[in-house]
Length: 235
Image (cartoon, rainbow, N blue to C red; front, side, top):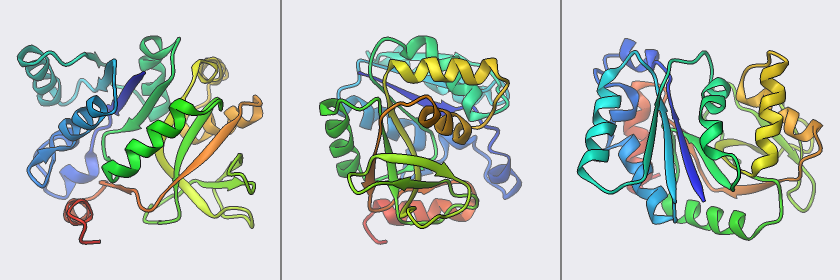
């Protein structure tokens, strides 16, 4: 199984708030966010880890190239500046097609035990995709997810509806049919990951929701301390 990290954002909000490092290299409890994800992915059986970084912050590319040179880690590094996470996913897709894979952004913070259970669930599932969800909402623009009683995903919404208990956690486990949907989205000139997810439903793919107790994003400088406390088990 392959894993992928979208790490091509500018991190403009962090830099405007005084954080000097590019977002992937921001440390949580002494470990760079991107290094933490790589370790977790390897511990969960990654055959290959594909990472996209932008051309604006060469420090991230240099960090990853040095890591690859110093270790036997199966890293593939794509360097390209893209207009959205969906476009970044598209640049990664040639490396992911043909097998099950897990995709997330570099600033998605979760507990490792929950993630390991999520990956085990996906590997054993016959669904076309399994999406991490949470009822913890600390997002500026959450994507609400409607489900049935078996946690089959019925839709993705910008506003909460009666059957929306959860929001998207930003961790996507998918299969090759999702790549076909992604290509269709690109052909139609669509953008944003949430529109891709809506198209998965429209295309009839079977998607399961997998609840996490809590998932947080590091979008602002104040989020760094929150994420560190969360990982220490203090929240």
